[in-house]
Length: 185
Image (tube, rainbow, N blue to C red; front, side, top):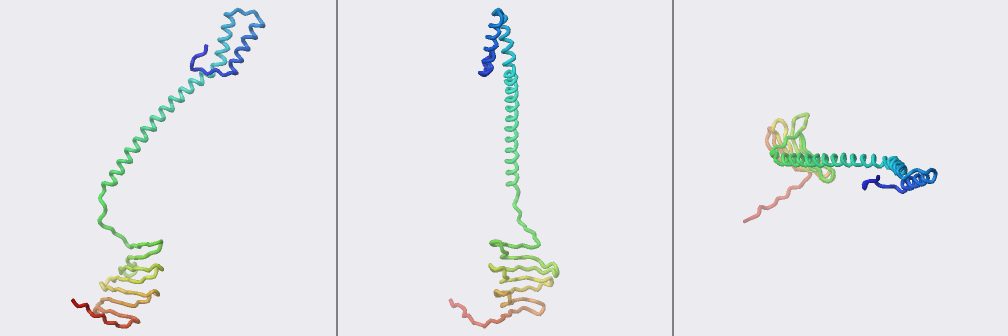
């Protein structure tokens, strides 16, 4: 007989009714034989649904197991992520930066360049304008001599200051001398 969990399809009910009526008309079977035949037909017609129902229950059980495993996995990943964040935040920040050269960019163009000369070992830095032209440069060489240069927009030196074995000096190129009075108090 049908159980409450089975779904009866209209096509199967029609087949069952027509088969029962045809057997009753053709032969004079008793009610008991008809009932046995009806049960057999129901078993044949509804057996796939019982298998589908069991298959569906198995699928739900597997799906529930998979969801449980995913939950555990997500919780584990959350714990690992939180631990990694805490460990990352606990590290001390570095107080020293060691580089061979440094370039500071603005709008994709270098504006400050610092570095060492691989050929003679000198060190220096330059400040560049918005066109990438060096306007101020300072540096030292391996002997300890140092200098500062202020340049025009064609990178021609205009003011040169430096020190060397012969002494220190200032050189003005193409400039006039203007004396500025000292402010009085």
